[in-house]
Image 1 (cartoon, rainbow, N blue to C red):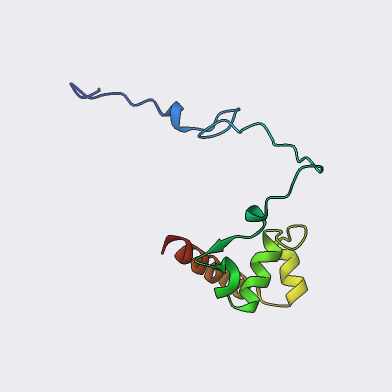
Image 2 (cartoon, one colour):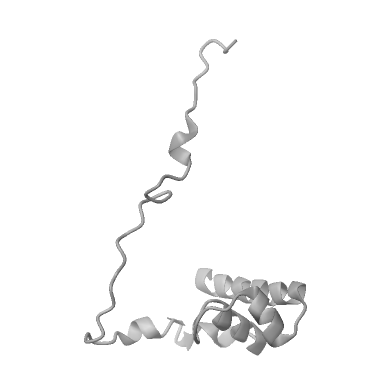
Length: 107
């Protein structure tokens, strides 16, 4: 028996829909190979230095490889076999590198 005065909450607006969640996916942008290159988009810089400069070499290597900054994106399984690091250590390196980037961008 519902409580008197209680409101019924419909959760359907919080669940993913076919057109994307929480917002519809934008139309994909097509690259124009003949257009000018925007140098600002090629260099992610904060405070005059490159964003990745404050990372350890291993953190930089893992983040660059995992997110495809230096080639095609590599899975954690591929990085594990390439670098020979235990998976928990590899996750720790990725996590600490991302934490440093987050702190740099927020601070």
